[in-house]
Image 1 (spheres, rainbow, N blue to C red):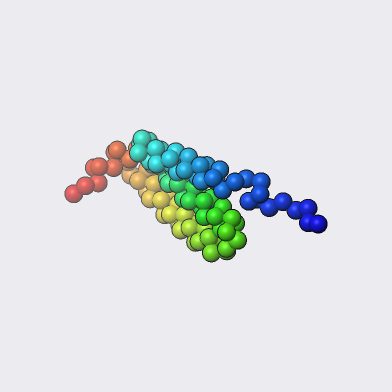
Image 2: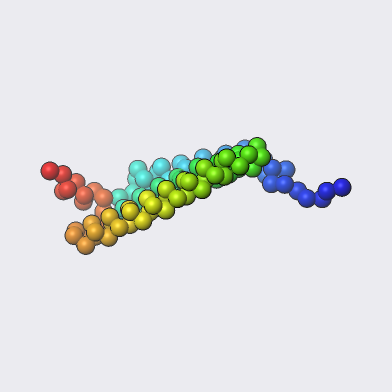
Length: 109
């Protein structure tokens, strides 16, 4: 008899859905409320990780690897987004001495 316990037997899929929804809601709230550009980027990363958690959980639950492959591609896009976003923030900080996104409306024509 096999004594191994899989993740789907220990934690029901509904818990992953609730956790992912809570993380995504925290990320959306942070993007909408905060004015610091670094915090906004972190909240976008939190939303992407909530989606990754849900994709990985359903992929494991359904025993299908396509969700985990999608997680890999989302992580690559998130890394590129973080590097480009931080490079933009460094340049904005050098010019304006602030990372407040409400200050960026002066970039309009």
